[in-house]
Image (cartoon, rainbow, N blue to C red; front, top):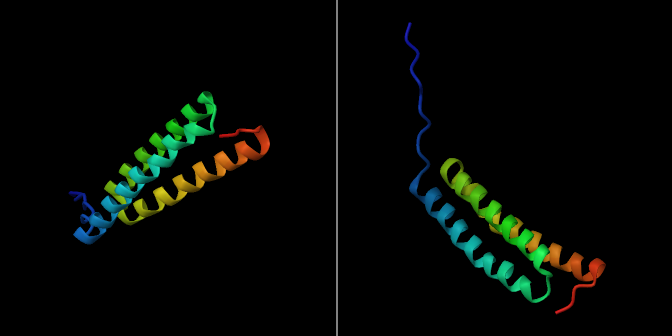
Length: 96
């Protein structure tokens, strides 16, 4: 009795291309993470940068396994930085 391991078919090229577009968009969102330093204290800024790197790792993981889901990473990352800085300004008194 032999058991063949059926490797999943690689995703189509257009899905990979959209996944790469998601990675590029995530790099663009990284600008907002850098610009957050204008209003964010350093310990919180480092936390935001670490979060961006975690989002990047998730995007790369998704690009390999499910390329179309990579398009959601920059949207979630932007919401995270926008919400985090807005919350910091409202609750913690961060000012620019």
